[in-house]
Length: 114
Length: 113
Image (tube, rainbow over all chains, first blue to last red; front, side, top):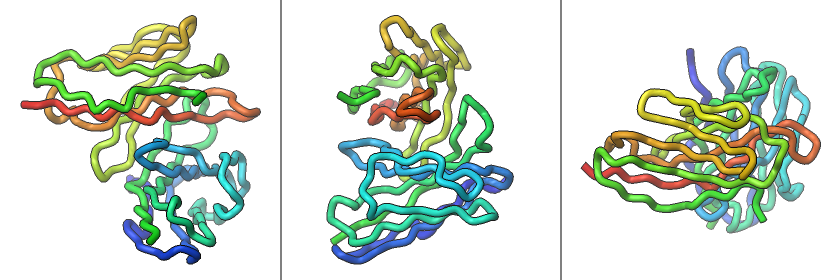
C-alpha cells in the first residue's frame, strides 16, 4: 500500500512569492490535514479537509489556504511569502471516520524563504 | 499557555538505559493519547496510543496516562540506538468545538551505543 506522497520535497522561494504544495493521501483515506513544523513551535495544525470540504482550521493567516479534490488529493497554497514561513510542511491522511484518528504522514515539503 | 507542553530536550542516554518522556496538557476533553516518533528527515509515525487513563505496553514501550494530573508519559526499556528520534506526544479530543489532535513540540532522544 503506497504511503502519503508529498511534492515537492524541497523548494526555495523569495519573500513575496507564492507556493503550492501537493499531497496524495493513502488510497481510501478521505481526510487530509496539513501541519507546519518549525524547531521552536513544533507541529502546528493548518487545516483539515474531508470529502473536499474544509472541516477544521488552525490559527494561521488567510495567506495560507488549501483545497481537496474529488480523488482526495490536496494542495495547500501560501501567498505573499514571509521569512517566517520557512518550515517543513507535513501532510497527513486518515480514513476520517475513526475517533482514534491515527494520522499517516508524508515526508514533508521543506520550504525555505529567502 | 500551550495546550500541550513537552520538554524539547535533547535527551542523551547510553544504550540499555530506561528512558522517560513526558508531557502535560490542559484540555480535559482529550480522550486519546498518542505518541508519534519522527526520525530525521521523515514524517512522524504513530508509535502507540492509549485511551483515557491507564497503562499500555507494547514490547519495550509503555505509555501511561494520568488524567487526574493531566500527565502523559512514555517509557522505553533497554533503549537502542535505533530509538534515536524525536518523540511527540499527541492527545486527541474536542478542542475549540471539533475533534482534533494537538501535538507537543517533541523531545529529541539520542541513544549512544
